[in-house]
Image 1 (cartoon, rainbow, N blue to C red):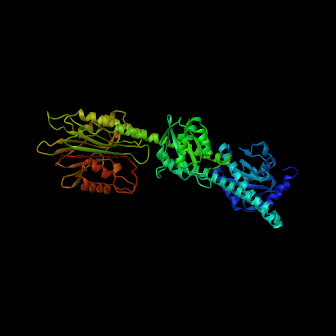
Image 2 (cartoon, one colour):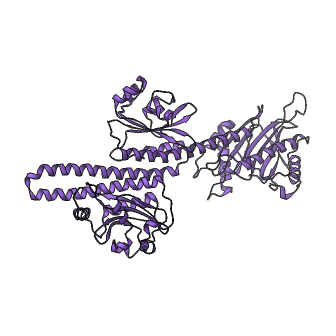
Image 3 (cartoon, rainbow, N blue to C red):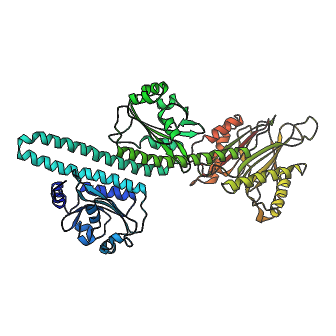
Length: 612
C-alpha cells in the first residue's frame, strides 16, 4: 500500500485480529497441523509487534517461552520473513550467515532447522510467519515447503477473516449508510472463510493420504481406502483408479460398492479419446471443466459415457511411480466445479501418495502371484488312482510370501503282476521355514525321496526314509522338517488294502473305518534333520477295510495360537468321523471351511484317500 507505514498498518491489523500473547484455539490448530504434516517437534504462529513477537498458536515450544507466548527481538527469527516478505528456509541455523545476529534463538529455543512462510492480511501486509522448527539439521523437501505454504495461506485467510469481521462490526456501529460496505465485507469474509475451510480440507486430505495409504497391502486395499479419502466442501462425486498394463488402462473396482463407471468400462486402450487415456499418453494432468470442453476436445464415446454417468467436471492425474507412469487417478464432480490452483496442487500432492501406494501394491500383488504360481508348480498333479479315491488341498499362509515348505506327493508303483492293481505311494511333509529357501529344499527332498523309494523294491517307506537320511547326512542339503511316507497296496489275502507307513516326527495320520470310528496313527520316529545322521527308520502296517478313509495333513491345519494341539487333533478327528463317508474332495472342502479364530499363520496341506 503506497504511502502507508507498514509498521502502523501491521499494528492496526493485529489489533483488529484480536490476537495477543495468549493461546488461541484456531492458531494452535494451525501449529498442530504443521507439526503433524511436516513431522517437526516445534511449530508456531508468530505475529510481530513493535518490540516483540507474540505466539498465539504454538506446539512443542520449550519453557519458559511456551508459557509466556512471546519472544524478545533477540529470539525473533521470523523478523527476516516480515522484513523481506519472503519465505525463510534454513537447513542449519548454526551455520547460516543470515542468522548470525540471532544466536539466542539457536541456543535458547533449540532452533536448528527452520522454515517460515509469510502470514499476510488482505492488503498484503506481512503480519508474521507460520514456522516449522526441527532440533536437528534438515533438508526441507519441496513437498514439505509446499504443504507449509498451503497451511500459511489458510492461516492468512483466517487472519483476514478476523480482521474483516472486526472492520465490519466497526463500520456497522458508525453509520447506517455504510450498510452496503458492510455487506461487501461480509461477502468477502464468507469467501475468505470458504477459502480457509478449503485450505484446512486440503491439509487434512494430505494428512489422511499420508497416514491411510501408508498401511495398504494390495490394489484392492488401496481402492477401498481411496473411497473415503476425499471429503469436505469440494468432495467429488466419484474418484476412480486406473492401472496401466501394456497399452491399456484397467479400472480397479471398488471391492465393497458397485459403481456404474467400473461396471460399464472395465478396460480402455491408451489411445482412447478419453481424458484419462490422454493423461496417460501425455504424462500430464488433464482438466475438463464442463461438458462444452468435453464435446470440443473428445470423441462422442467419451461424451456419451460422461452423460450417462452424470459427470460435468473431471480432473485426471497421472500416477508417477519410481520409473514410469503406473496409471491415472480420475476425480469427477456431478456439478461444475472450479478447481483452483491450491486445490489442484493439493490433489496433485495426494496423487503422489496414491502412486506410492499403487506401486507398492503392484509389487506385492506380483510377488504373491509369482509365489502362488511357483508353489502350485511344485505341487504334484494327483494321479488317477482308480480304484482308490484321492484328493488334496493346499492353502497358503495368510501372511508372508505365500510360499513355503509344505507339500504332498502321490504316484503309482510298478505293478506286482500283470493286470493287477498298482500300489500307490503317498507323502505329506513340511520342510522347516516359510520362504523361497524352504520351497527349494522341499523340491529337492521330494525328488530324493521318490528316487530312494523306486530304488528299493519292494518299496518300503522306512527303507526309503532311511536312504533319504543317509543322503542328507552326506550331501549339502539343509533339510529339516517332518513327513509321513506311506504305501497303499491291495491286501494279499482277501478284499481291502494294506497301509504301510513311516512317520518322521510328523503330526499323526487319522484313519476312519466304515463304522465311523477314527484312529490316531501315533507310531512315529524322530524328525528329519541332517545333523541327526543316518537313522534306521521303522514302519507300521494296518489293514484298511473297504470304505476306510485316510487323512494326512501338515501342522498348519491344527496349530493355532492359544490352542492345544492334542485338542485340535481331537476336533479334526471328530470332523472326520462325521463327514468321512463323503467323497474325499467334499471332505476337504468341509475341513477347509471349518470356523477358526485366526487366519492360518502357516501353510496347510491335507491329503484324503478312500479305500474301495
